[in-house]
Amino acid sequence: MKIKLCGFTEQKSVELACNLGCDFIGAVFVKKSIRYIPPQDSQIISNLINNYKNTKKVAVVMNQSVEELSEIYQYFSPHFFQLHGDEDHDFIAKIKQKFPNIGLIKAIAVNNLDDIKSSKNFSDLADYLLFDNKIAGSGEKFNWQLLDGFDSTTPWFLSGGININNLEEIFKNPAIKFIDISSGIEEIKGIKSLKLISEIMKKFHEIQK
Image (tube, rainbow, N blue to C red; front, side):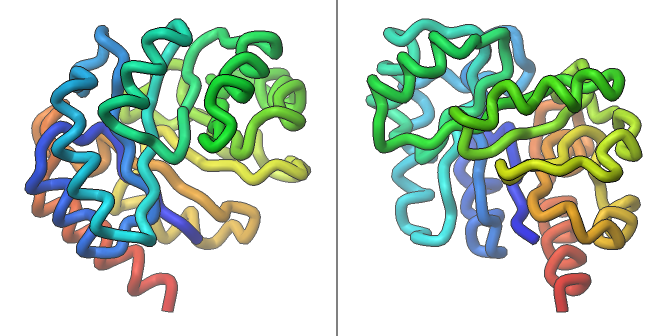
C-alpha cells in the first residue's frame, strides 16, 4: 500500500513526512480551502521534496484554468495534478496535451453507488482515481462499502475520514492499494501536526510488515 499525505503549507511538516517515507505529498492550490498555499510560496516546499526521490508531488486543483495550472507548474513542478472539480474530458485532454509529463489524479466525490460507477468515464484519461467525501477535506468518511466489488483498470486512492483509528480497518481490504490523508494528520483544522504525522506513519509501516 502507498500513502499520500495532503494539505501541507510549511517546511517542517513536509520534511518530517518525507523522512518517514511518505509516497505522495499534496499541496492545495484551491483558494477557498483552509489549506490553500499560493503558488509562489510552494516553491520552498517543492525544492525540499525534490531531495526525496521516492516522494511524488501532487498539486490539488479545482476548476482552474490552464494559465493557473501553468503558474502552479512554474513554482511547484508537480508530478501529478489532482483534479477536484467538474473538469470534463475535453479539459482533461487539454491538460494532458499542455503538460505531457505530468500525471493526473481525478477525484470523485462520492455520495452513492452511481458516483462510483461514474468514475469509469475518466479511466481512459486519469492515471489514478481518488474517491472522497462530497466535502473534500472535511475529515468525514463516505460509505466505503460502496467500493466493495469495484473493478477498475485504473488504480485508485481511498480518501475521506482516514485517521490512525481506522487505518487497520483499511488494511483488511486487499483492494485498497493507495490511501490519502489530510485532516487525519491535524489536531487543529488546517494545521499539520508533527505528532500525528509521526504516529500515523509509524502505524502505517508497522501494519505493512
